[in-house]
Length: 100
Image 1: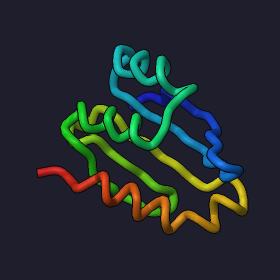
Image 2: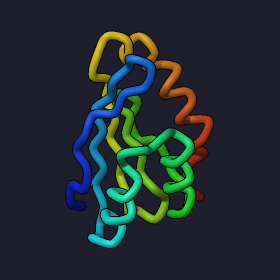
Image 3: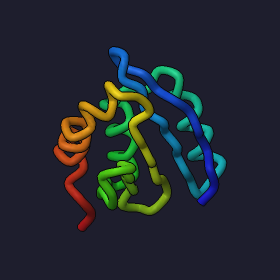
């Protein structure tokens, strides 16, 4: 996989470092077209279009799509993010039910 996105996203003062790896330029282009306005729901819609997802690590939070085309690695970037990290991981687990 190749690194497609390496950025920091913020929500209500909490910041997270986000790295997204993909297997193809087409998928990377799809991601980079939405990354500036990405939300959790958009991210989950994206992985849903790739067969769902599974979480392979909590810290950093590592999400892989079931078709193995995308890997998202998220880590807290500030104190506020670290304080709410457990809730963020729980929310990701609610949306990421695993692969069959």
